[in-house]
Image (cartoon, rainbow, N blue to C red; front, side, top):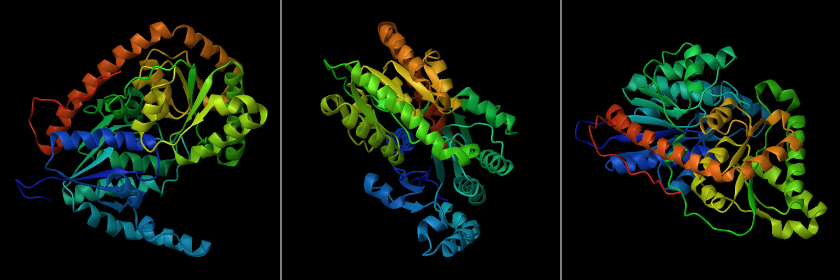
Length: 415
């Protein structure tokens, strides 16, 4: 631990450096908070992709686990042996890593969620070891505006609740997440519910485009842990329905901007692009846009020029709503449903595994017709979210840095 009067040593912890834009958007928001409120702090990261993280941010980073640090084995047997050894080695390695920090922050992310495929002895194990190590070494830990759901698998539940109980500060991005942790046995009576951290990111300059453009956010969805035997089937069905909807948009005269949230989503982008080039060759070249984005801020810049958004990934939906864009959510988890309810857009959502294209078209038409009333309501909600996040920054400064300040971090309220 740092001695009194020396700069606080802060580490961000999570699945960072792996290309997931939502995870990095949450990080960007809290990174701005620390740099603005506590510019003297020494910042680094404990993450899944330290090399990529250092390249992108110029911030020192270390691997989250022994296995990530040393890499896979040359054979399958060797790889399994290294993974098993790594789990034991991390019992010693994690306390040594965490000992170098005063504060460890988990910035947003669905760290207590099981909505996608998740194995207990991967990230959940590392998360638990981090919390335990921080408690042992005297570091403060904060789970800031994270997502959660009830974990049915006993091992996952034990790791999640153990990590949460050891934290200095906890907050959740919706009531559902807090209730899920409470139902799993965590005392949440002092835990806050605040908006997703991405709502604190600066909004890009609005773009006025004469073309009717739809932001179509896609993801390589393969179901949850319970769907492992059907993962390929689920992926193929979802992709086929997204392709069908993209064909309708092109035939109706809309321009499509494809957006993603993770490198794995590029397979769906390719499926849509290949289909339109084959079935709509004259339209695909001028009605289809697909550009890479390295951050959630870049993705928001891309969405600034669209009229309506139809998206699957949670942070694609968040980004669209942050920009006050009329939005339809193809939801793969309760977090998306909760957000759409908060934004008073509950009727404009569908569950991803039961995606109905004709109904989606009807929802799209209805939302487009109501855009003039939807946009002002979204702007009002965004202003409310910014105020709430500004208040939370005061709480974080006091809880993690012992700072008592009355001035708040300026949050961009541009639309």
